[in-house]
Length: 224
Image 1 (cartoon, rainbow, N blue to C red):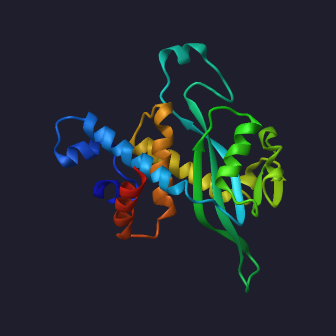
Image 2 (image 1 turned 180 degrees about the vertical axis):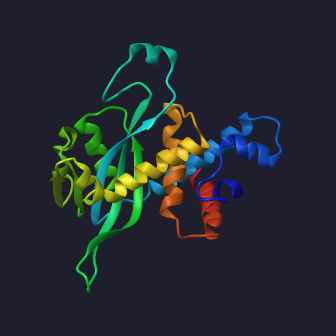
């Protein structure tokens, strides 16, 4: 547990095995994944509210030889998994300069098994308070979001939208991809949610410092 929270970036299971001086990899792998599941269960208790950014990111996963031979492109492409990212942000304005920015609080991440509006609707209902204001791009999968929140605002997907309106979502996507590439290299699609659980749990508690370990102990006791 301590090694899982010792650094912001975390450790790979192989590195944890080395640090613990254990000969067998499999028990360490099972233990770490159980903890990651507990972290996801803990965060699933909460919903985001207020001003919300919502978008999707494509994460690299390990693909089988059969999948590689099929050579699918675009959505559902081989070696890619679609993840819905939600960020709770608040607009800020400098009183002296009038410059506008935003502050981010909490995040959620969910692996999507398809690209239908039904799954997006389910994700919105699970993740976001119905009294929230949601910002996203104009994806055809998002056509029903307005039915589940107070206000729904869409903008054309471009660099400006990514930089301003959906800023925190894309910062989270970028940081998660960098973290996975540096620590874990190849992640199988069926385990991607567990890695996201750890990343988001630590991101949501980024100001906890040494108390993060205590929180992980609580999650391990109550959520397994």
